[in-house]
Length: 172
Image (cartoon, one colour):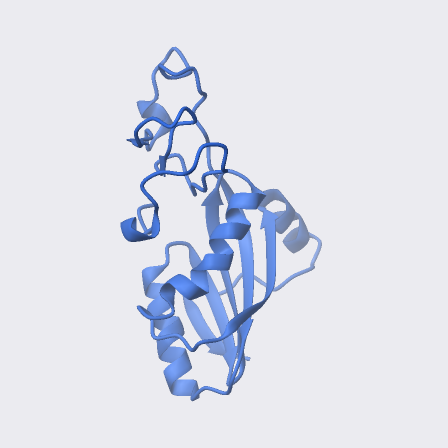
């Protein structure tokens, strides 16, 4: 899912700090402070004997459903819609966005190792795309991250929104 900008990823993480990676194809620093290496992007490319040379098991990404709510000063609707459409075009797994002059809600899927990583990536989304997508300088006011099974259970029980038209950007 190569949508992460390389300049947004530090070359090395400090020893003992948690390294955020959204999927198994991401880069990570070795725990012993060694050099950064690329992880195998597909499980089929993994070695048959299991763990790699260092004895660490390969990480697997899971899908998380994310709802990110942002708000701020009133912005012209045409400008806001154009920014959200650019974000939808740039962001893999984008589902839908709803907006009003002073707030918006973005729904999408994120692939990450665990909830902690999925939430951290979601919290960076608006700021990282603010300039490139022409988004307003709003702040994040809400975040919901649930695993795939929970999302599908909610939909099956009649809770939550009906499945959106993929990539749609609609007013409230």
